[in-house]
Length: 96
Image (cartoon, rainbow, N blue to C red; front, side):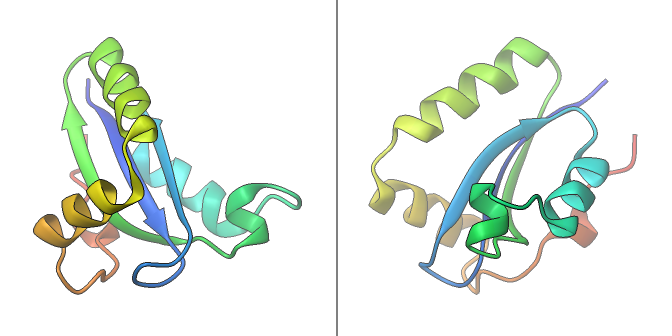
């Protein structure tokens, strides 16, 4: 089974959200549906700009925690190395 760590953005260098999920496609649908009052809903954060796949849940959770503690410039650099144009990467999520 795969677990994912991901970063969503509302625009290049705009508001971002770091999260983790077991079923990335379902989680992305939840974000895109919007939850009133949530960070992603408030700032219209719906574009998947970065993701990583992990085999173990504890690896994904630990990686998410580490990324959340990173400085914003480091997160931007990580995104730009993976996805220089900050385009939607949801079509590249592997099916499990």
